[in-house]
Amino acid sequence: MTRKLLLAALLAVGAVLPGAADVRVDVRAPEQVFDLGTIHAASGEAVLVGEGETVPGDLYAFAGTVRIDGTVAGDAWAAARRVRVTGRVGGDLGAGGAAVIVTGEIGGDLRASGASLVLRGGVERNALLMGARIVIGRDARIGGTLYASGGHVRIEGRVDGPVRVTAGKVVLGGTIGGAVRVDCDELEILPGCHVAGDLEYDTRTEPRVPEGAVAGKVTRVDLGRARREAEGCHGSSVSIRSLFAPTLGLAWRVLFHGYLAFVSLVTGILLFLFFRRFLASAVDRCADWGGLGASFGTGLVSLLLLLVLGVICIFPFLMIPLGFGVWCLLGALLFFGGVVGKAIAGCLVLRPFLRRAVHPVLALVVGVLVTWLVGLVPWLGGFVSLLVTLTGMGAVLLRLYDAGAGTGASA
Image (cartoon, rainbow, N blue to C red; front, top):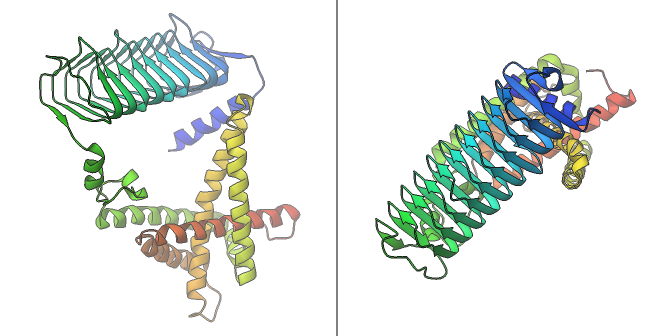
């Protein structure tokens, strides 16, 4: 976890540092990249791994253009407008951008998302693709399972494992070694297509299946209804719970919320040990209804402002580093605000029963327990969690403002 946090910090710093337009990853010039053990992080207008060059470990790139013509021995993770891989990635490749083109070799899994995804190379394991336009070219080969979701999906290459596709239009024209399940508006099966397993499809129009194209059974099923039944939903609506854990029952909810409560408790105790006066004064801000209202209002306004600023910074590419910082700041405020908010909730519960001041750690324990129990109730738990988090977030921001103005106790 510490290594990932350091990596994120390095990427953020590297993205805003002035320097050359291109950051070239070159083993002969290691000073041009950030090295953290076997991790190499680079950012700039362009990150290039030249032909014949080798990155000995993992590569994390944040740039306008990322191009890998050489070799990355470990995993490669790239976020850019355009990602192109013509060389080899020994491990997994994770890529996101407007256009992702892979004509080289991937030794592990491929996970990519973007407006246009084109695969004409080889993937030794599985591929998970999400995009408006997805093309698996004739020369492409996927050694495992293909999961694809997008507006238009075209498969003309070879997939050794099963295929699961959800899209507006799906075109099958390659060789698939496993079963195929397609959920789309329109399905087109090209001559020469061969599916070694069964074909299950859910389409608006009946597709024409060429003779001999499918070795197994061809079945039209209501995949939407099957998903709803598997998720325990009746009717056309899909709950938030089903998006994350279709089989999530009461026992799993208890464990999941219990884990979150444990993390909040440990974090709160650490905050108390190192920032005792800061935590106590932030909680004391909500000693009355006026303080609670001010804290909640501050948290709500700050959340909306940071969300708007984070979205605005996404579109101009030069502002992406600032947007990255905004989203990191928002995540930190929400996390620590949730911890402080639980301590505030504990104080509100305990004050009617205690004549003396409530100890912050005792308030935290009670607040974590109460929010954990309430969190098990659908809808109500989410609403209370949001209310508690925004109140704690506002209390933290107001306490920071006091500290900056010199009116509060020092942390």
